[in-house]
Length: 68
Image (tube, rainbow, N blue to C red):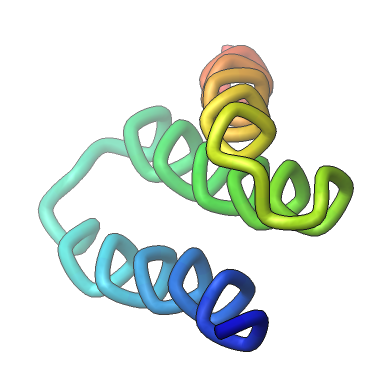
C-alpha cells in the first residue's frame, strides 16, 4: 500500500506528459510543475492527500510563472 502512495503520482505525471503534445509551452510547464509538486508534496508529507494537493498547486503556479 505504501508503494502505491508514491507510484500513483508518478503514473499521473507520466499520463499528463503524454497528453501535453498539443499544449503551449506555458501550459506544459504548468502541468509538469503540478506533477512534480504533487510528487514532492506526497513524499514530504508521507503520502498525505492535503500535502499532495498543496504540492500540486504550488508546483503548478511555479511552472506557470517560469514561462513568463
